[in-house]
Length: 173
Image 1 (tube, rainbow, N blue to C red):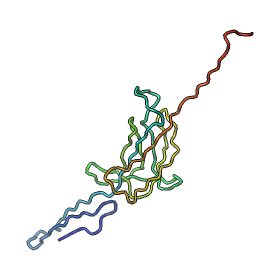
Image 2 (image 1 turned 180 degrees about the vertical axis):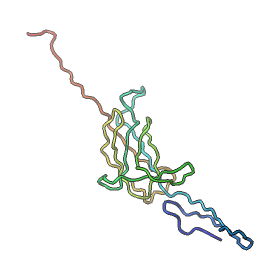
Image 3 (image 1 turned 45 degrees about the vertical axis):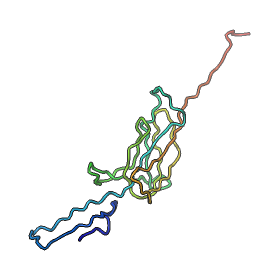
Image 4 (image 1 turned 90 degrees about the vertical axis):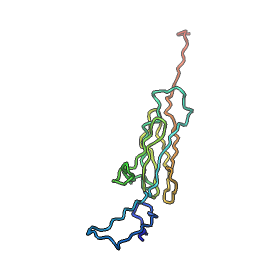
């Protein structure tokens, strides 16, 4: 019997116990056991909302889409974190910058990241909104859900200021 005892970094232990009988194995090729380790990388995503009541009618100068949030590995937000690049089969094929970008509904992409502490900072506000200056602390060291960890960001709208100057219709009295 063969059972995995230590998982590869970024993966969970494959709990399968493989029964191997080599008594009649005559090939010169090594006997192959295929073990599939599930990924042990937490997921993270962001949901952005407006600090003001959203209008039912779409207004082209405001959009929740296009906001860009960078994950950092340090509290000072100087070391950019990396996310895993994953292929269609769920295999890690490399690394990329850990960046969350929102769609029109305020939902971001989902990132596969390592078990660590991250600091999420908005780098670019979406059209019609001010930059969210909050730095979100995210601790994924012990996060055990299959659902992505959700960062919630509420952005203030960039409201134009209007000044009205009143004058008399009677000129010099």
